[in-house]
Image 1 (cartoon, rainbow, N blue to C red):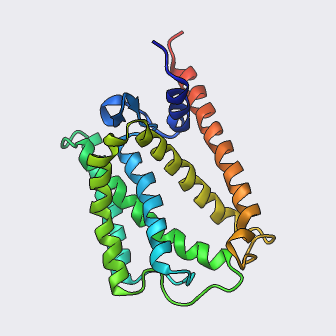
Image 2 (cartoon, rainbow, N blue to C red; image 1 turned 30 degrees about the vertical axis):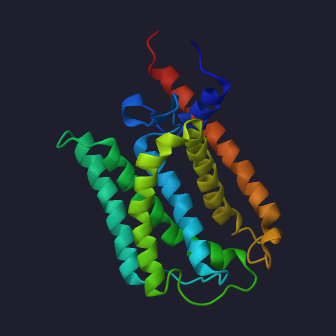
Length: 232
């Protein structure tokens, strides 16, 4: 039986980004997620962390880098994922989808520690002052959100059925859009040009368009590479 339209869309969203091996991916309601367990953690972790930072920031648009202790925690998250990936691919040890998910979530959270200050600095006409997650309580809340996110994805995600795959697909699109927004923000036309959220609409529209172009290009590149190694 062929894929449904929904599964086809999910497949192509992640096709150029991930190996999509069933054994290393989650499924819910009979639908495989668009990316593997580790990538699911990265993309969802990125979006959850960015939303949490915005919530804790309370509109202050703080441009400073997070405290050193929090950057160290973020670095440890990234190193944990690298250790898990490298040692398992090298055949030195076995890993699991839960560990892939957990280290992916940590890395997704860590990436926003670099992204959030740049966005606040580059986008707003009048950035605030202070460090992102500068208060001790905010940093602790951010850290605690990592295992909570892992638990929600591991136990709660499958209960959503097709909604799990859709949520991950949205996380992929949002992550790419936010990263593209950083690039757009260095264009003089958009650099520090927003005083209100709606002022960002043109920049966000460009970032969204770039996201779909990039995903299509990644799909095409994988197809091209697969055609080169396919038996003739």
